[in-house]
Amino acid sequence: MSGLTTSSLGRKVAMSLSGFFLITFLLVHLGINLTLFIGADTFNAASHFMATNPLIQVMQYVLAAGFVFHIFMGIWLELKNRASRPIKYAKNNAAANSGWASRNMIYTGILILLFIILHLKDFFVKIKFGEVHDDYELVTELFKNPIYVLIYVIAFILLGIHLSHGFQSAFTSVGARAPKYLKYVKNIGMAFSYFIALGFSIIAIYFYFA
Image (cartoon, rainbow, N blue to C red; front, side, top):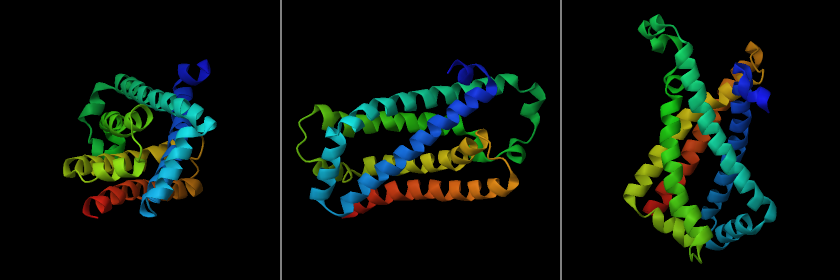
């Protein structure tokens, strides 16, 4: 593990592996949230399974560690990259060298982290440690709050922007750099980022107006 964090390449690979883990989590999380459209019984059953399954209970701490690792590794890599750039680099046209999402990964990441803290307070803490008897009611009632829905949608738009570069970066860091693969990786990454951002946002907006 020390090799993954002591070299520049190792840090990028470690960042990518944690990113793959979080990408998988987002798909599972969205799948659970989509059961809201089926009804209270289905969503509550899915939520209960997630809250009581022993394997998932262990994995939630692995997930938390993955988030922390990904965030701090991202900040560390950004600081290292900035420190290694020559002064004249700042005078160049940054937009000509990289996309907006790439240049602002650290900022979208920090804003997403702030949302995660709010999200944990409103959902995870209440469900796990509070006296919530109906998870469906808790979620749908929160989505009746226009301010919360606005924050929620903005957060997932930022997450989509973050993923639009992060997905591609994760694959290129583990070796998918050949032109014949890179095109597919870029297209799949953009499709995935739209899918996640729109999927979560549509759920919140639907239940606000429902």
